Image (spheres, rainbow, N blue to C red):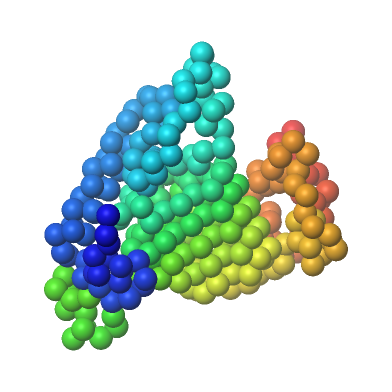
Length: 258
């Protein structure tokens, strides 16, 4: 199906008009799909995945039903896990990688593409704002004027704390941590901790995953198991303690969780 000129401008990050019949209908479709997901109640993992794919208009077929509920759940172990409630503008511009976790009350203003890399963890009340408006009120003129957007990209193995706001055009590098309550206004380098409003670099994360530190390419965890993700963010960003190595991360997690 051909994409209209106005919608193509939206996808390109150019000025476009949001309150057209086509885009009004697209947002209404997504709103109702989100409502079905948020109000699903106690349903199977399969059903939740199906409803999420409906929101994002992902037409990938579901695998055949397994013989038991437990075995069927395992078929979706790599699918992203998004806790309701969640709100998206269009849905089709959001892409989540494998084993992504998004906690409740997330907002995606996906005028332009929003991607989140595999194994990234997103706290509650996080907002991804890929939409923007002209600064000049003469141009902006409410719902009658044009708006625009810029893509947001979050790398693999990141940790986004609760109540974070990520603004249009931001890219967050692989393995980085954004402290709770931060407003991210500019790109975040890989393997760094940023905090504040506007978010600023607090420290470098020392990790074997960073080839600049380890001198070799990261080969992944034994059995593809993510370590260290359970360490509280407060401990990770505390300047006077500092996490020096992956072994320190494991020891800290062991101490705090018995």
